Structure formats: C-alpha cells, structure tokens
Amino acid sequence: MDLSVIEAAGLARVSPRYMRNLIRDEKLPAKKVNGQWKIKKEDLTVLFPELQAEFNAKLSEVRASVDQTLDKVAQKHGVRGYGSVQDLRTWRQFEPVWQEIQKLSGAGADEERLIRAKRSLAAFAGMVVQGYHEWNRKVKRASYETARRRLAAGITHLLLYNAAVPERVVAVTEAVQTLERDVMVSLSGLIRTMERRR
Image (cartoon, rainbow, N blue to C red; front, top):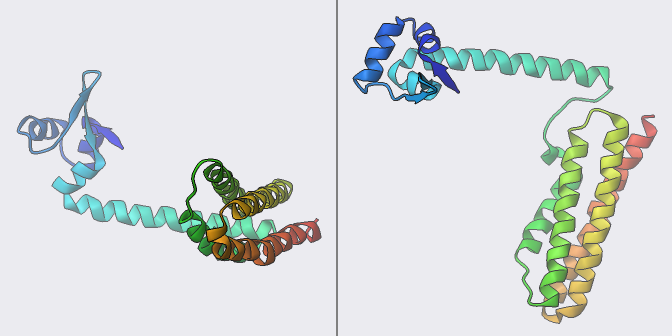
C-alpha cells in the first residue's frame, strides 16, 4: 500500500518535512505519482522498525475480529465452523489423483483427450472450492452439483484417453477407479448433506 508523505509521517510520528528530507537524501525509497511522493509501507517499516511491531499487533487484532465474525456467521448458519477446503475428504481424495494425472502426456488426438480431462478436473476442483466457501446453501449445493458433472466429464475423457494409449492403462485405470469410487462418492455425500439441511 502506497502512503502519502503526510500519511507516512503520521504513522512514523515525525514531521512531513523530516519525511521529505529522508526522501531527498535517498534514505527512504519513494516515487512521484501525479506530483506527490508515494511511499510503500514496507519501506517505511524498514526505516522505522518499531512500526512493524505496531502493524503486526493491528494485524493480529484484525485477524481475531475476522475469526470472531466467521464463528458467529458459522453458528448462525448452523455450520460447525470454518476451515480449509483441504479439510474436505473429497479434496483429500482428489489431490493425489490430480498429481498423478498431471504427470500423464500424449500426442495428437490423445493429447487433446488428456487436455479435456485435465480441464474438466480443474473445473471440478474450482467448483468444490467455490462450494466450500459459499454460505448460501442453494448456491453451495449448485456448486457441488456442477462439480459432480465436471468430475463425470473428466472421468469420461480419461477413459477415452485410456482406450487410445494402452501403455498408460494401469495409471489411468487406478485414477479413474479412485475418482469414481472415492471422490464421486464423497462429493455425493456433500450434496446429500445439503439436501438434508433444507
């Protein structure tokens, strides 16, 4: 965040003239924007280290306030809490399969099938993340249902790729089985959970 000379002087508890002198003497990096000096907060904390402690304290206050607000919202919506999408079983099951799929390669039409599979699976991951972070139950459920369709499309493209590239049969077959047996089932469980909460 860029600060004006007056804002920077107020934070550092020095006069604007002193701040301009630091800029003139090249002790404080700054750039002119529309005829006014702009100073980065990071550069200010290097020159005035005590400001870093203040910034950290304020940041901790803001984080605590955000956490407290999220807890209240979670309670209001009947959610057990908040966390990371990585806490979802669906995500934990999908991630290692995704890493293996990223290692696959092809040529010509095979490559196109693989690219389509990767795009569909990336879209699946995006919809899972979007659904996880959504508070509105209808939108959350719609995101998960879209994720299920993207996952099905990704599986279809992988099966077509698998049929065309026999040397990769084992790796692709294992990936497809995990996607169908584990990821699709846990995603369906998320959708059923949304239906029960109506």
